[in-house]
Image (cartoon, rainbow, N blue to C red):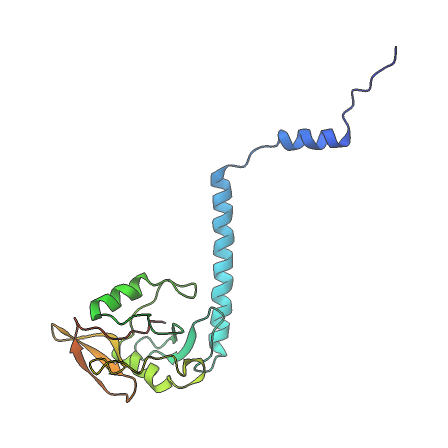
Length: 182
């Protein structure tokens, strides 16, 4: 009678090892994924910070936003979305839109103050900003862009982008908005 060899082949050993391996927990996987996401986010933030240090006004940043200058309110570099919001909206709707906006990998967008909006106006013809502001519209709109600066109970400040003047406007009326972060 012939002897049989009970030693498993290499392929059988690999299959057995695979089938008997310890199963990773979902929690361990999630924690590892969070750590990787945090590292990636930190790396993106460092790259963005370095890009801003070397940016000229109107440059498109690595995240797709546009460098617009220094905020006169925060004294920090200010970035804007690459375009106006897709529709005109009321003062309160603009604030809500900015609060919910997730663009260019960021969710900390806001409507600019009237002074920040003036920085946008001063630079609106530079680099990637040129031609991206809505400067047309109905006679009631005339290229107005909301600021976050309120005035009186029912009015808010806006800046008119075809000529650069600022004034107040009834908060319930619709106009344009460009979001910023700093």
